[in-house]
Length: 427
Ligand SMILES: [Zn+2]
Image (cartoon, rainbow, N blue to C red):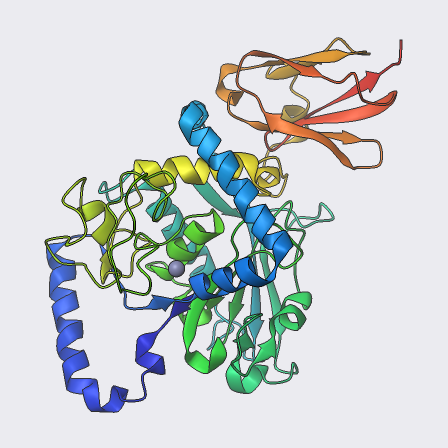
């Protein structure tokens, strides 16, 4: 969660001159460090996460499982096989406004939302050239869950929810006054298996925070919450929170609240679990890093996942973790979602790109895929729509065991839109 200290600090009025000078300094630094984003916030996702790790054994197990899967992925370098593929994540934006006309106040315009997603993509694509291209792209959904065309934006008047008009939303587990998070999200949400849900809200905890996101453990209420004023083309909040959504921690993770240097024995399991972002304390953003002289310090102090005032990059290590997360966590199903679909029926049925054989099959199928599809996720559904198998295609001819499947008709779905029906027989 991002916390705007300027909103929360009760002494802000006495600090206006100081703040103004600070803003001028930030602008000057922004001009100097071209294409960085100026930001000033604090994130409370850690508090919620730590609380859940203590109080929710299911959540704790999910996180530990995910960590072990990602560690294995990192050690096996399997993630390198993903690098040639640009993943597309379908996004649905729910604007929970206060009854204003479209384009005014909290009911932000379609164009503002489209520009925010475009800006998010610029950050992940490394258009400023200062970090790495994560090869993760976000698209406003072109289809709704029923398959109807959509612009990926839903608008809902949330003013009737108790406490929403006065205080905005109160995140689950937070003691502030506000609308109950689940009540708000129940107004409008799309299946998290097919869409990454973003809720744009008026306020969070009466202005105390500007955003927060769920770590990728799934669930009905998985997604990202952001205040309308931060849903902009140059938002640092949006890439930061999406980073959390794909399991990135803060670069200063493990600093005990700016108290001590994070442990740095094994970079895969200590701190932010990223090896090319030197560990540091939250407040250390200047030229020298008191916690470490190793690595590229700029990778941390200008990182989207820091609290430092100027941010401009994700790193290769973060890219690897994001893409490993996308391949093993509940996020994996987003990669085969049709939510971004823009291909026509002819392309959907294009068997020159891939085929599944033999058909009918008994104990195994071979998936023959064009080179450009390598790294794509696949999902096998039974005839009730239930997901039976899923994984990632790594070679042009992949064998998948299906001996334990009951006889019947199945749908093999590859990437966003390639689908083929196949039949399993007992003998
Ligand atoms: Zn954060």
